[in-house]
Length: 424
Image (cartoon, rainbow, N blue to C red; front, top):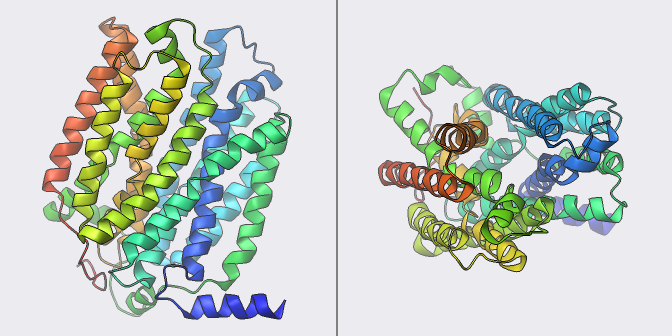
């Protein structure tokens, strides 16, 4: 016991190490975050069946699942602003404690829901809680680590955290597909994490700014200055491919499989598990590449090109079996493993008095863009223009990537940026 305490104290003191306690706890926090965020996609059908939705009624399943996921995404959008503002006003640690407490409660509540509206409300509350986890963790780690190590540190946070999707999938399998128990386990993991966070120290940069007479966490400051707004908009747009790949291609991989090569036995939950395991590897590697080139943008460009290659494979004749589909989903996941660098760049582009607000809202706005991408993909291209799944996917992917490359071109390099400054 004494040796564990000694190790914990040494990790806490060694703030310049990428393995300090803040990095470890932030990574575990994001692990639980991703576990919860992806769990509904994995347990969707059995959980809806358990609430009385008839699975053979495809329209009813689609309506119920859309309602639940839309409420969760709305929670993420609201929570992104709420926790971001609190992170700059009250501190990074207050968000790390508050967000995990809220979505732990929501997880326990989800394990007892009896109707679809209750399910949707539980996921809405969980969405609010989930929104604060990554942004606050990335902000804290970015401010604690020196600039020559923060890219690797934040990549470890995201890389380790993303294995939460793998944990969610196998928890569902090992509990005999007991979806209620899976949610309760998620709540228990959150409680354990709360105890670990007691040992984490607050950011020194935040403490310094807190003593100054400056505005902190003013969300509207992103829109009152032309240069600041441009940076904020670009920081959002460079992350769009991640949720097009996961939210459309991987999530609907079973439907794509049926259209591409006939009978398909693809499980969307398994495809997502493979994709997220690969994303985790990519997120760790992108930090090392960024470190090697001493550039965020060079690392980002490499992964963008891999994403383009993955899209070409997905819509090519090579994608002609379940095995190929799973493999390509994993490759696409790896290629979008730039999530950590994307969020880190968002944090690095703004002063300490707005950093948590930026780092928390930016990834959640990208998540919130999924309904708009789906609107283009399903409602406009398929329903209005009657395009098939392949054509709709190709056009949507092309539009997303063109927007992303334009935003990337105008985004500033942030690798060498000193973060100890404020936004006037």
